[in-house]
Length: 168
Image (cartoon, rainbow, N blue to C red; front, side, top):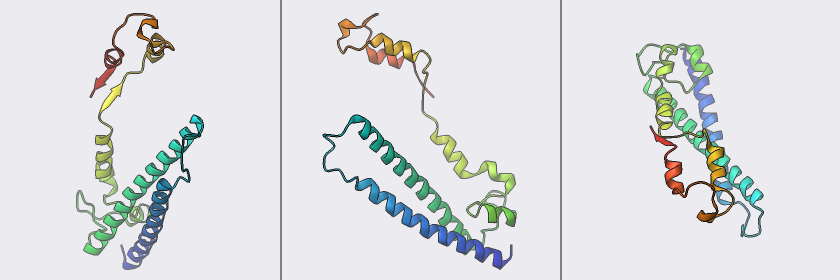
């Protein structure tokens, strides 16, 4: 990779970094300023929409922060003079790959072994809820809050749900 290509990629990364910082600031300001003094008189549907919007903004902000970290890592690798080398095997990363994915730190052979991919899969471990028969479970509880008005047995609802939850 020649120095002109490296400078072009570095400039692109710096511009993207500045844009992301502004977007993160904007999203964080939106989370704290919803314009409502009280949610007391709002319809539950409106509250659901507001909650969805807030969750979406938070998710976008998390992704932007993660991407900002990737950009900073790439810039650090440039400053150290190892930007063009694969973090796994140490071989040179194809310049076309670096132009297409400026934040990559692995060659194409080790793209599957990327640290971000490993962290993604680790974060997906946890509870798995078996929702087969969920409608029948819901119908068993009926529309009343009184246990005596429910059809079927009087088994503890927590026990009933726990029997369908698996820990991985």
